[in-house]
Image (cartoon, rainbow, N blue to C red; front, side):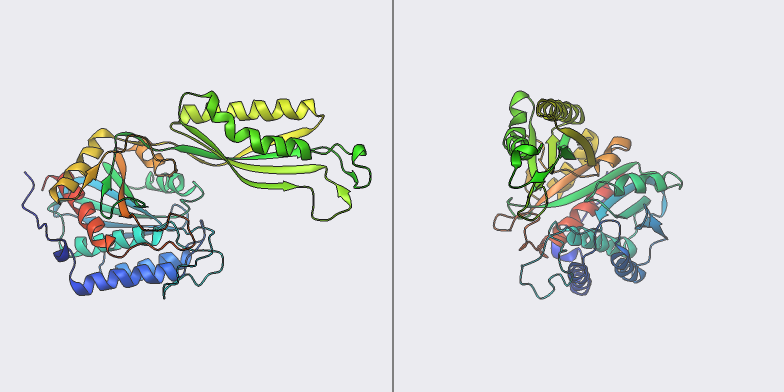
Length: 390
């Protein structure tokens, strides 16, 4: 049976330790970096971990990530927790003193908070080692582009650090503060970016009849493609994210157009059916108008499928700590490349409510709530303890 544990959250970290974790988050928040270029972020984390040294620190894993290993007193399971390093292309307007100093970039998804949670867990592990097993803290690059997880997994495969179980969390604005949300099966949707290029031929703007312009088809597709999901019984969504028709100016009837969309569905196979339907619709429409088309897919994210046994440890941990626990009836619409982890290892992602009044994720005014750190650190530690059976 697991040993008795302390349910007083204020004793998870000392006041000094919590202040250091909050300060770390604020520094990370002020200096966001894009996917695949998180070098300063890793340096900041490495400096923090030096004060709470792991038994092993592996740098440049997954292309530019970090792995910290904290060994228990005796052999046992390897339990991994993952956080993301990258920021998003959103200009911040939160007004906090530590707001982003990098134009056009911010931690509007809360990855600074996720990193701080794992840093706080490192403080706990360095001070109070597990009786058995080891904890593997993974700071992963390039989550926002869907590339980082596969790269990190490829590098992990060359080490002795194969996880027996893996976990990740995401803060979730719009839900009561501290509420834990977890479900077995599909937790978050599969998604993919689709780029459509339409090519005809341009003409003088005074003689549009001499062009093969994609203008009319572009307008048609913008309205039609988001309605594609109505043909399917499963949940799916098509969102137009960018449109370009011709070039800026007044003298040329356009001969080329570009449409960018995000497609998502509650499973990998449903997403494949949606992509195929979109491709057929676009190609058929383009041929009927004597236009050439090129369709490409980008930034694919698999469906994130939670293992039922891993979910049971999240549930037990939340219940032990007295946290409100809810099982969502449907998968979340957003995507997460942690699905690559749960496809290979027993694992689960869960969410923690960031508050009903919090701005939504990717909003210019979003800022991860510091008060959530202790709750999340305590839950991660409890999950690890339950898995090790100590």
